[in-house]
Length: 385
Image (cartoon, rainbow, N blue to C red; front, side):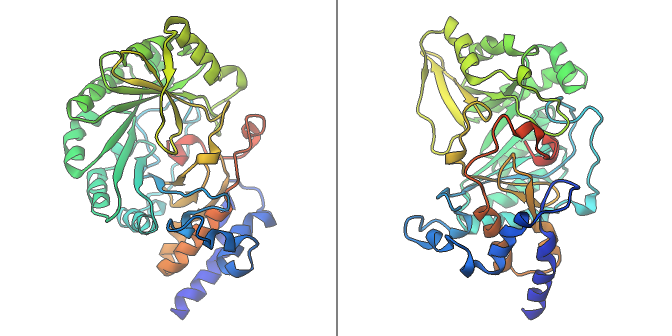
């Protein structure tokens, strides 16, 4: 135990850092000071009160948000090159030896689940390019207390892997599709348009296999696909599809600007011009999507309004990158490497302290549409969609 503690003290100074080459400033180490001397942290005792119990204090931040949803990126690689996700010049992939192994993924997941996480989503990159993805799903489903194993995928190779994933216990699917036009698909993804039909087929097969609903993620970009909004809404008429329109968000290398962003309010106007009875429906707790439905349609529509109307106050999500860094906010640039901690042999309780330190540093909200574009962050493909 003493040896592990010495290792822990020796590495904490390198764990909490922004995704940047700039020198680390003092405030960026505050999270680790919590881990080392929690008793001296102002307000720490407030998360020990009955107000937030019985949910784990490790996963409850200083604003009372309980984090029971973990998104784990299991690959940086992808078989598409979508413009909003990957820089035009590509990315430098992390060496395989620096990525989380399947055993490390399960270990991290088991710690989070033991503290109250109920849902885990596998992301990428593209999670299906990882050869052991089915085994990872199967092992996650064996964790006591975990209720949902979900996946976000571009759908290109999903159809042939879907039976095995379903058998392994995959509960929920989000399939990314930004256009119903093959030629646009080729332009957005920088890959042959033949992949478009494969994605459409994957959506149909997912419905046939009982995924209920199938969520379809569509990033709306002005001048590219805002003219297809009504076509996507119409796709919910006879099928239990939940189309989720996502406001275009800024990440490193995706050439974001305000002119390309179509805000939620504008999308709503477009839809209500054709469907005046497009009505708000009840959302699930902590849902990122504002749900709507055309009366009489089988499926529904949602809007993820990260830029125009943030939902930070109800955020219950944490993220693990494929190289083992914990991000408490999608737009935050401070990360803690759980991979390095595990590989240097610290005990589970000390690992929990590092997780708690990061969670306690989570801010009330992201920096806002004015400041986000100038902040250093990873490209989306290196975070996990």
